[in-house]
Image (tube, rainbow, N blue to C red):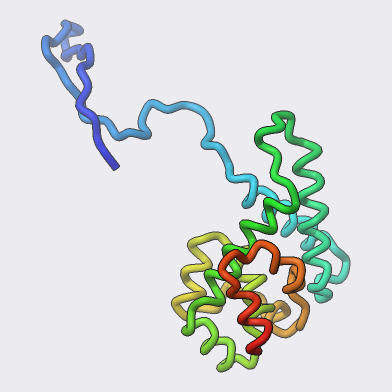
Length: 177
């Protein structure tokens, strides 16, 4: 992060103006208002809340439905059409995350050790924040609820995401597993 040296009007202890005063400020200092939130994570947060509100959260197959509902609710709330994220755009970004996870041999190895299907686990890991995803990819699986590891149901089926897989990794994964 860059710091900036700016000229300020400083006042000493006797309330007299100090000449040629300057101050080093952080780039983020002085910027008022909230940061723009990423629609992708807003949708995932909404989906998590919807899922947690379900009577029976052991049915993790509902998570994909909660994501779809969250996308629709987000689109209905957004006033600016340029900020709308469609289900296709969401799935495209989601696919990028899933592919990034599946493309790591260490992740596949961790799945085998835990007797979990890599694609299914990858779809749930893709819903995590980037910080938690990094933890999982380094081998710390504490943030993944066991029900997601055991459920056997991905958030989106492979066929739904294959159209967004420009590198063919999901196709390779589907045919080789």
